[in-house]
Image (cartoon, rainbow, N blue to C red; front, side, top):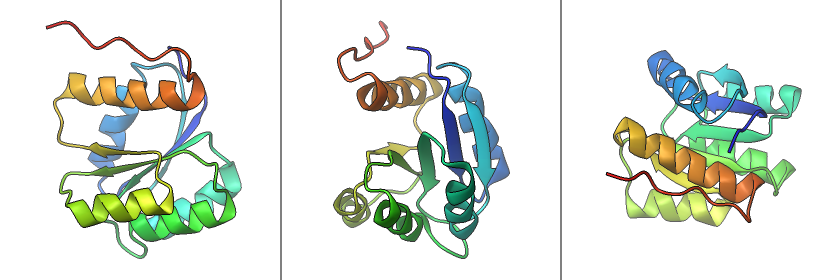
Length: 136
């Protein structure tokens, strides 16, 4: 799989945005746009019309759940992957209820995170061709 679309990454930590960008570079050559909070993410989403959105759950001004709700209210088909390092069941359930495409732990080992990003992106953009898990 080689994903070359536009991806919006919203996370209040710049190093996390850069890390996720680097990992996405292993999946293809996407155009990356970044936001440091949920409100900026929603505004940038409206301006750029990305193919995919990755939202941190905990951000200032507007959290990822609020940003997800606003994006999905405008475009229910927009693929949105939620990112977090602290996940509880109620947060995951709320994101699913609002229409999140997937939910990823940012603290997964690098190769697992790349695999999960690839798996979710393939499921959204190439549903008939899921990636093969890495061999140990």
